[in-house]
Length: 183
Image 1: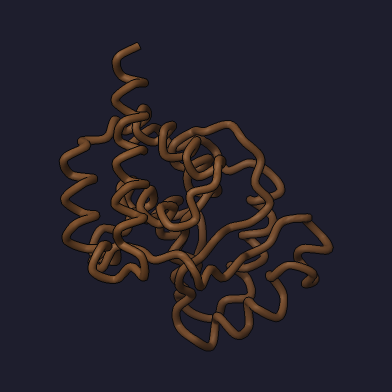
Image 2 (image 1 turned 90 degrees about the horizontal axis):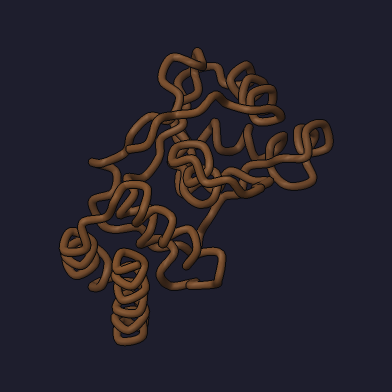
């Protein structure tokens, strides 16, 4: 894992307000550009925190009213929570979550998927930004490509709608990472 950088504005203020709204511990399982930038140091803008899970359910309802796109906190800070329902994480991802800013909040726990799980959540969409994020992660971590393949085969492939297409996508990603390493 790369060194954690300080939480910049407007994220600090936005998340502090969410922390104040929470009346008990709230876990956000975070993916996407927010994790790649905050935890691994990629320099690119992002206006949202993509979350797979907000637990407990009561907190998800409360956060939906204030922190989603168009809500009061978005109006105030220009950033928002985005509840992701289309990304498929590896089956055992929860066992590998890591807290992004331990001790920074009283009630809020921002949990990041490990870098391999994070990369694999981008597999089905596979847009240019996703490919760029994965190549960055592969350099920053650096990736063990066998671990990436194994996790895909064991924990993601069985749950995909079109695994043959994703097999090809993963192979192309691995070839791009190997090309980067050869340079």
